Length: 185
Image (cartoon, rainbow, N blue to C red; front, side, top):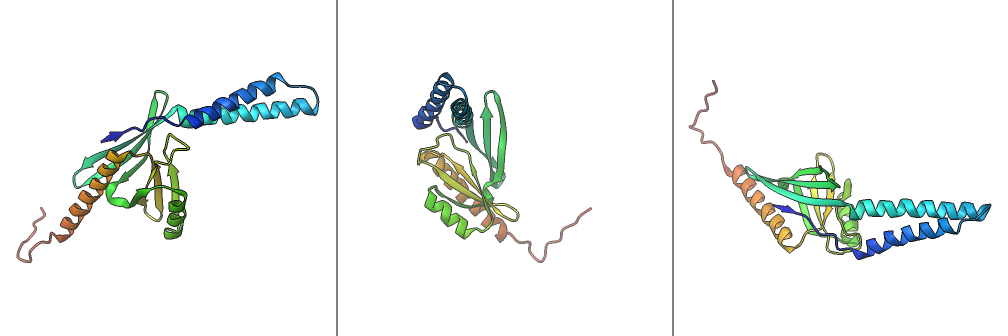
């Protein structure tokens, strides 16, 4: 299943447009001496900040991909900027430790529960509260991937987690009988 959230955060749009307007105004009202240097610095900082917000939250598109693979699922995050896209993370669903709604309190709780945890934010909308976090067990540490999942995609992830847990528990129950021999030639 492939899910791509929509860009719906108008606050970020207003913010980077305001920064571009501030840069234009400070360039036009430049002067000489300390005042000119101050206006030039403000305009440069405004342009750089506005470009960063434009590139990060408006022109970048994230897609969350889950593919079934034998008794497990693969989870990818595809990051596309313009026409170029690449996968920025890959995990197996069997490595999921937690999946829940994201908030600053949850972030603090995760930092306390898992000593070595890294956070990765793959969201479009900066000021929207509809975010989820998936915590994956990596070899020696934990990775928390922050995504924007709607209700249907959240249910799909929960179902994939349950199916993977069931498959893993059934694999652990399968044993060879003592009477059977395995010939390897």
